[in-house]
Length: 128
Image (cartoon, rainbow, N blue to C red; front, side, top):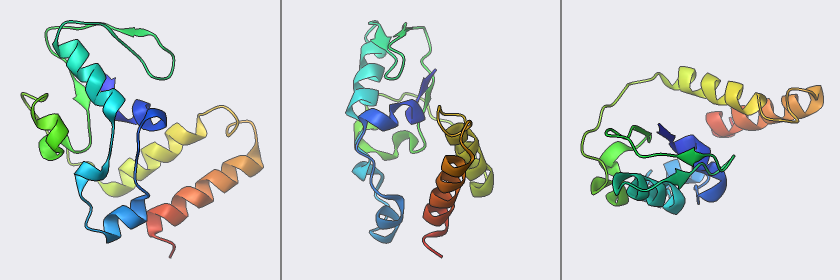
């Protein structure tokens, strides 16, 4: 499985609140490495995970977790079949928090953890 979220550090992701306010165009999410790795796998080549550099080998079916599916122009030629799982926003947000808090530095340091949660809550609520 190739996970969209694993490519955050090598992607150009718009600020969420600004992105929503400007119309939420999925094409503004630029993920060239994610797209390149999917093309490589589709062509039978081996890609490398962006975080740990472990090999990602091609298989008969390539499962890609992408929140936009075929909505982004760049993904239309890569995705043959798309499934949408309607995850409630609160559940998706809590999963994001849990993932973020598991990163080194947050789980060991209470103050950093609180800062991270407050920052994510502010972004989620749009500064309210």
